[in-house]
Length: 454
Ligand code: ADP
Image (cartoon, rainbow, N blue to C red; front, side, top):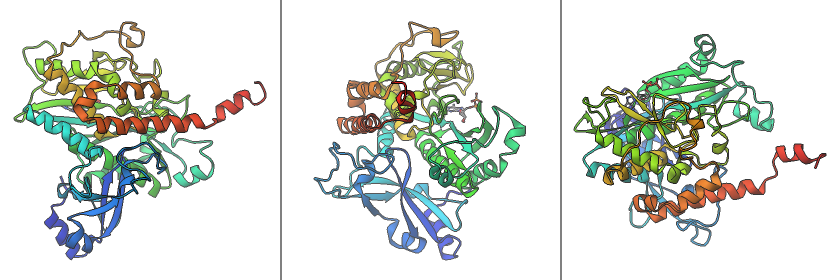
């Protein structure tokens, strides 16, 4: 891909003056880029090797609060440092910022230089390594849905997030006329990301006013998560550069459709699609059936990694295309899992549960762990569901609230075995904290409902 740079290529661009800034980033628990802006000379001379950050970066909430209760860091332990180790395979141009390149870092313990277990990138790498030990490679694609708004982030914040006006006035699903009107934002998103080395497939209007979707070609799971994170970041920055705002909040208004992030998954062996069996009616191999059985059986355990906030659960409503049941179906958009590309080499499973706020490293890691469990235990896949899955009383529900998903995470013996107790305890604390913060707040809805009438 154009846009990705070797370290030597970066050095020559720094020498000829075309790059003067290098963003050194880690991915935090919320899937955001955090880090430092280096003068490019300093980066290529010394900091390419390592730099440091406060270890609270993997223990904060969205607002950078420092909740108590994490074993890894605290006021008591003095909030020490982590090592940020740039992964030089991830150097790329940032074409929407002048003279700028970016590199993603792994997060290492300051003393031992071992990967920090609860760092999202290392969580995904661990599951990829387990899968490789079984002889397989995972390829994934995450669809990114989001809303564009008329006004900028700053205007919207100053107005208290009220009277939000999406960029368009009507449902723009596949709508060429309406999306033409949004090309001043969407065309630079596609082109800048392509020039940054992301294999962009397309953008399209989605099924609500102002709703957009970006599709990136499927890739090795770690690349897919890196691409998702960079794309989400770029969408916000490019929207901001154009005087608009983009939100990945899964449900920004109760009367509007929510935003999701569907995850397409397939396993490969020696470059061949291991999910495909031409002799099967749907083209599913036994391996695929075991993987899907694990994915479905353990969905309640890992729902938190697909829906990490109180708001995430507002998306799971009947009749909205957001699934509520852990069943699979062939090309049916009401099920939690959809078989796509049936009968072809492109046969794959799409998980439709995740919201646009998921952290792709955590979501993919949890689903790989479930799939691996299905393969190891040779789990049996039940037959596909047909018809309106919302009305299927026998189908297993996913947790409907953050509170419930926190408990299924905490009590998941499978995730504790696959990811480690430290990881499960760390994210269980993050989940609890979200709920504690929400429970403390008096909402506009309660005041309007009860102020006079209660
Ligand atoms: P649809 O239009 O029905 O959503 P697409 O053909 O656009 O389906 O595919 C959706 C996503 O699936 C794309 O991002 C694509 O890159 C990805 N994809 C295609 N084949 C595979 C595969 N074998 N494994 C994982 N993802 C895949």
